[in-house]
Image 1 (cartoon, rainbow, N blue to C red):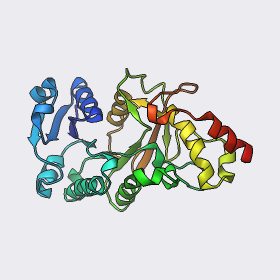
Image 2 (cartoon, rainbow, N blue to C red):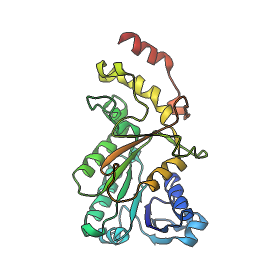
Image 3 (tube, one colour):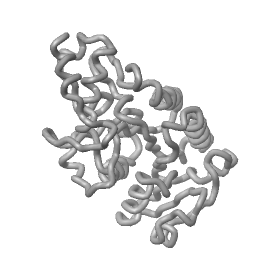
Length: 259
C-alpha cells in the first residue's frame, strides 16, 4: 500500500484521515506538536514526528514529505487569518524544496466559499461578510496556483461529526459549487448572491469521515483532480445543519422577488 503523510492529525478532520489511512493498510506518518493528543491507535501504529509546523525548520518539513505517496494537510484554521496563510506558505515551500521526482501529491483544505458560483467566476469568498473571515482561502489558493506542486484543494461546506454517507452518495464538483445556485444568479449583483449562497450551504455540510475518504480516494499522481478545487455536497434533497448556517428562507424569497 501507499505511504501517507498527514499534517493536523490531532484535529477533527485530520484524525479521520489518519484512522482511515491505517484501516486501509497504508503506511502512516504524522507530524504533531502534542503527541499526547493523538488517538492511542495512531500513536502506536504511525510514525510520529514531533514538531510545531509553524516553527519547525523547513528542511525538517521537506524530509517529512520527501518520498511519500501522498501528503494530506489538515492543519490550520481559517479564522486565524494571517497565521493560517503563513502556515500554508511554509508547507508549500517545504514541499517545493523536495526534488520533483520525489514530491508527493498534496491535498490542502479550503471551503465552499472558494468555489465558483456562476459562469462569471464569482466566488462566495468575494461576497460581503463572507470575505471578512474566509479571505485566507483565496490567498492560499492563489499561492498554490503559482506553485508546480501536484495539489488538490478540498472545498466542502462546514463539516460535522456524523456517520459517513459514502462517497457514492455525495455530489462531487470540480471548480464550481457542488450545490449549484439557480440560473438567475448570474444576473444578480454580489450583495444579492449572499442569501442564495447561504441557502445552499446546508446542502454542503458533510461528515468529516466523507471528506477524509474523498482525499484518500484521490492520491494518485495527476488525474482529473490535480491542481483543481473540489467541492462536496450531500445527496439531492438532503440538508445538514449547523446553527450558524440556519436557513433564512425569507431572505432568499426576497432576493428572488427582486431578480
